[in-house]
Image (spheres, rainbow, N blue to C red):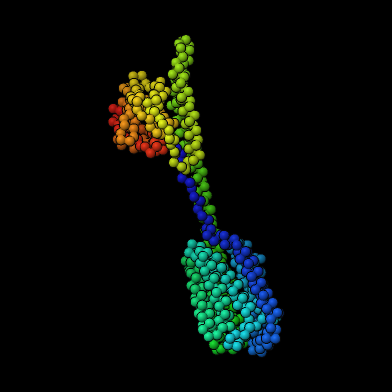
Length: 532
């Protein structure tokens, strides 16, 4: 009877990434634990392994690489680390705070790696081509670079670059870094195989990261902001491409060990410094501003939706009251007429009409069922009203309705139950069918000034057609479709003088919908109407 389509609250901007954003600290916790565990594992290998070979490798490294080439990256990352801590203390909004927290982890891992290398607390391995290298440096990259990718992803569009693409880029990055030392320590075909895997995954990472940047650029309206992000992208791609170049030159022995370590320090620092630069910080500020604007728009949109939903609920409550008051009017007036007749009989000392008492009881039962049905429908307003399945004898039902409405019929109007008593029962909801008849016969009694009202029935194929015919004022053809709309009443002089809420035929249609039935109208102004 009362059905309201539920409003769906608009999704909050960035909800697609919210779960992963919330886990930023978990990401950092797992990353820190993993790095320290792996670094400790390397240190244990160094302590318990072949110390003589390690001392020889270490002596050779110091002989080939000047100490300042290993010290300056540590000093540079120490300075950046101090800046990260200061930035972290000054950041008030969540986006910038998380970004600087990630940068603190990235530069902290880099600083710790260079510190352990300078203190000779990590093993030095000899490559297949005889050069010396620190596996801890690869371990650092396998933790810092995925975090850089994660940070870039946070600033991208969640609808264009989803979480699985982040995982894809991170997995390729880790494979790329781990297959590097695997190729370094191998020779022949295995070296070529590991090298090919490392380069293939490197290009996969570049493609995905470029897509993250492009989604960020596409969402920027300011041309200056787009230029800043594009500059960061080109600078980052250029610096990242230096890593495989340095690695390849070192593998081919085209640069000295000293130059190799100098290049590693320069590339590593420059690649991470990009994200501490003013360029990247400006991009983060722009991302934050866009999200704040989107959040305000989301809140305003949801405020409108909430207000609209509250208004719909208020309207639904008012509609329920109107429906119940309309449905109760006819049977209550009938009960009042019957009870008035009984009082008159008592006053005149005429034997009480038992039929009148039975009709009053029947009407009271109908009212009870009607109220229960209305309350149940209101509870399940999002579902289509369902009709009960029981055998209903239409002759008896129409007889009850006619008896109850008869006192309301105007003088000179005849109300007749012309349904054969032997008519077979129909399967339906007795309360709903009585509601239909109350409205149709009640309308006929209100709009018929003289003549007759007949309720007929006939069997057609596998269903029964019930007709309520009257000689009332009739309905114009152009108004027939409108009379089934709620709260619409005819505006002609006679019709308007008869009153009504405009709900009766609307409720008839709703009740019949629950029976998979329909109602048709034949009418002519001034001659009457027939509802089938």
